[in-house]
Image 1 (cartoon, helix red, strand yellow):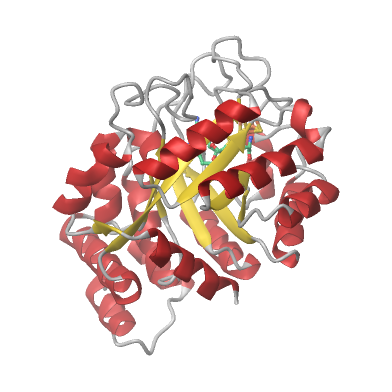
Image 2: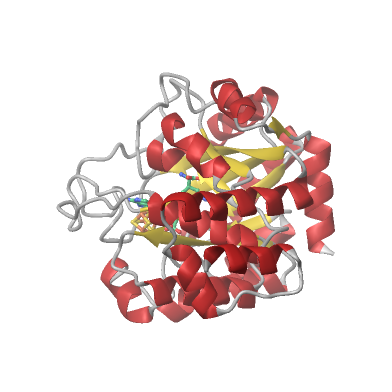
Length: 346
Ligand code: SAM
Ligand code: MD0
Ligand code: SF4
């Protein structure tokens, strides 16, 4: 019974078994509400009412890969392709910093302009850190060990690389010509160099409940300090375009279960998946970071929703305030974020 599982959990003496996690992931109705409430309780115990805010700078949308789920895959002619100049990137990062974000996430497609020249990427990290004074996350895709080393040396705090799924066969249906092992290897390298790593899961791509549980165990095993889950959103012009988008409930239950399993870790509520409308349910499921905050009208794209809510200014620090408050939360200070980061890196 869900109630028994949650009671035992809250007594703090019990680690969740696979069977119990499976039950939590299948919760419905009032049981589901109880799982979310337990997740919020676990969040409060570690973070109080604080939430963190991440600015998202998708600075190059060129990509050498052909991921079947992604709008920006090489062969898709629909998406906006751009590569922002270093000056523009720094200016955007500073603007985001002034608006109140706690971290800048520098994201790119696997653009050879950078993957073949790691020093260019390292220099961007250096400049953004210096000009904003904020923590920096890099999401460059799979890059060489040497590139990761240069990123660490440049002071990148986080390396984000989502496996999407930890079932190698299913992985191959998403990232056909890419290596499961090499993608995992990059995270090991980043971790060994002292960077924090973020792992992530897609939902609605054919995964089973046991795949999801296996992914949580892998996240634990690799020591990910931030763990995310996003519902797959079908994209025009891609092989997976005709797939039906799944309900958000799997994503929400993943968030809640991850919060119970990793109470002191960061779990994003991404504005990219369901815009501002979807924020409240993700925060109420136990997320504690709002990601994909994007400056309006500067020509920057999102990923799962390349343009939704961006130019309207809903994906901004100001745009998310009411929702944060409605959830009984508040934005943390930059100092609080830095303190958390120092603590987890020890
Ligand atoms: N190119 C780098 C990489 O693949 O790791 C970083 C950028 S990539 C766009 C970041 C993430 O966006 C992917 O790992 C995936 O989780 C997510 N994503 C891409 N397409 C998506 C879609 N259609 N629906 C939901 N999430 C998506
Ligand atoms: C997000 N669109 O946070 C961004 C992206 C990459 N590190 C993050 C998936 O939703
Ligand atoms: Fe490129 Fe990343 Fe999209 Fe794959 S998910 S096509 S690597 S931008």
